[in-house]
Length: 446
Ligand code: PMP
Image 1 (cartoon, rainbow, N blue to C red):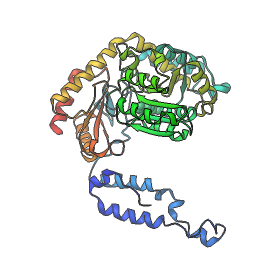
Image 2: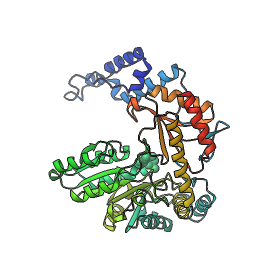
Image 3: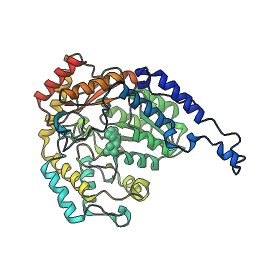
Image 4: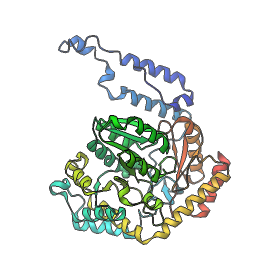
């Protein structure tokens, strides 16, 4: 099979290396002759291509090498795996220097907040560093339930369950609740974890155009009756674009077509609504209007892991049967305590939410005035600067770094090549001066 090469390689015009590698891959992957029928035969064994038992010949690894080697040859600095030497919020330290930072999800500055840090330390003193077992058997600690009940209260729903990873929360929840007779419809820009969950479930998958509730309605009119359970999945704020769905429209559609609705609030909790209670508060909806509230603990909540909140039957079902919960260790006490403390702080510091929203709006307005393409961003914590090629995004990120600004480029295949971008995450701790300086520098470089 001819390997597909990501657009950055084409963008780099490194055709010779590309062709040589493709030749090598084709040779390495030439199928063995009658390998299955003569498997016990030593000759046939020798005919098994190296590509089938050597990691360095794996096609996706080869593609990665093309990208990385090509970029290095062009003198591009690798923008990934930078070493941050302390807590990262509006600023961060890298290699001994301080940078204005736009690459962390610390939206309300609660990672590094003394109250949150103290809570994590106290939990270690009391419970140790690991619960050393799945919650179901002997890994349950009071701090887990306190956190889950706090999340359920925030959504005004029956209960919540926390998983050790945000990504695994989506994989395990969707993977467990849905099956081959079911359909999952999702926004075309939905996060990878949702796609992986759908793949695991074996359900039919149908994407609909970004935020287009009308198109979703049409798909459901055409296909709803062919399936048993149907799930619609949205994000509260889309992590690449910084815009959000018209949630009341989606609620009405899911009701009319008798479907489940799931909203991933990874980037909207702490960001939307006057008190930071998320997209539900923004639109003034009841918690019960959405069947599955999902969120991560790694962003506003200053920890690590994910949650599902909803009715008791949903949470109880997942607690006893979702593999990513059942067969995985309970959250480390320090992490659960940090997220619980962050949740408590969220209730006490609405001014931080207001600051975050103001800074985001200001960033967006200044960027637009400077002629920067911010796509459909609403200025809520996530603002892209779409520059049109992976090469340009990588170069701009490196140039900004030289000017003391740390922002991550987002390249193909994470986004289509023509919408490669820099993605700015805003924190409530950013100052107007930092934002003004950033836009000025970016506008001069772009
Ligand atoms: N959902 C969305 C929308 C995300 O952006 C992310 C990661 N940023 C996740 C889920 C996974 O969360 P985590 O990184 O906490 O595992």
